[in-house]
Amino acid sequence: MNYFIDLWNSFYHVMIEGNRYNFMISGLKNTFIITFGALAIGVVIGIIVAAIRTSFDKNKESLRTRKGFGYFSLSFLNSVCKIYLTIARGTPVVVQLMISYFIIFASADDGVPVAIFAFGINSGAYVAEIFRSGIMSVDNGQFEAGRSLGFNYLQTMWHIVIPQMFKVVLPTLCNEFIALLKETSVAGYVGVIDLTKAGNTIAGRTFSYFIPLLSVAAIYLILVMILTWLVSLLERRLRKSDH
Amino acid sequence: MTTKNALIRVENLVKNFGEIEVLKGINSEITRGEVVVIIGASGSGKSTFLRCLNLLEYPTDGNIFFNDVNITDPKTDINLHRQKMGMVFQQFNLFPHMTILKNMTLAPVKLLKMSKQDAEKKAMALLQKVGLADRANAYPSQLSGGQKQRVAIVRALCMDPEVMLFDEPTSALDPEMVGEVLGVIKDLAASGMTMAIVTHEMGFAREVADRVIFIDEGVIAEEGSPEEIFGNPKCPRLQEFLSKVL
Image 1: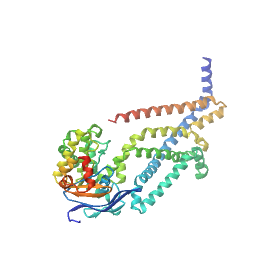
Image 2: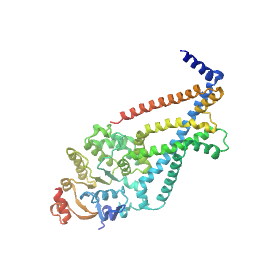
Image 3: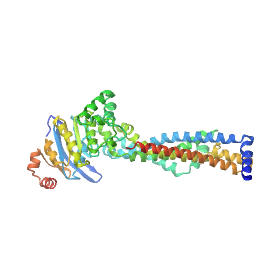
Image 4: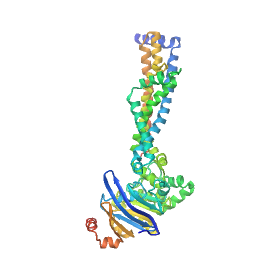
């Protein structure tokens, strides 16, 4: 019993006194802003990159037979995308974040937009591959049926392939979102007060690491558990619409 | 060779897949209102030939004219011509995320700018003809194979095509469902639709065809009326093929 009273006392001392919990709240807010912002950028990049990569894979045969500029330009874009994927997935996100903050946006005061940018670029690579595998998983006969009715490539993708792709990738996409939420914990490297940095700051001020760091871990854990639960609900919903 | 009424004219069609020569120079034409049945062994190139007609496979060499327009010319907008070439696949390829009615009205509404009401009215009339009007709001996964293929046929018909291409339309069906699909195709033939059909159903071929093309090793080995092809085959390969399938 004494143990819990001690625990409460130290919690009170560390978190409540001097309103230090406000650090945690604003840190959590920044974590959310960075995660959602990065996800939005990631999805946009992901769609564009996946579109280029799959159009190239699907059309290279016929474009090569027809020769001309189409094959050249699409193959160039495809190479650019491949380089992007290699770099974004082949280097640590912390390094990318620091390069963004200290080199690319060296004059930036606020780290939050830079963090959104860096995590968005990083996440885009993973989202692109998720979308690409989703598009590839849709039977090619669907694509041919669309084209045979007279739809052009983009119309076929939009009306026929992408709606089917979304069903396949939604759970994976949510998992990417969960991973992204945890990855943003390194935003402190560029002076952003996110949840992790907030905990660390409180620890520094109170010389007590136990309560702040465990609180940070608990908050991440709870967020991830809620999100995981939501994903499982979603998966069940999607399965239900399979006849 | 060239006649005035040719709806589709194929000149020296060559198609390679990598190193493999699948079609080695095919010359043919399909006249308006004609039903052409294409037969041949597996791997002979008959499906590839059919798929080249609407450029689902882009020919390596040669020309294909549709309504006297060279559709193999890269400057031709193939999408416009495909609207006039209905295609039915072995695997049906209905859109699983749409109802039967939506499957049928999507292309007319988006491509022909038909109003939703008109498109639905037309789709319902066609469904009525193939006996599936009561399934209009079902999803493809709720239909049997034969029903799916009948829907696939009327989906193509919703675009008012000038020619219908059938790529082994009954090969993926359970035997007891073959008849219902062939029945629909026969009705269509009787209505004067121009058709090119790849099939293994020889009895059906003999019954419905105006002309039969036998493709062997990437060339047309023999062609003629069903009576000639099935009754009096000349080419030894065709004799061998028929002795195996009949």
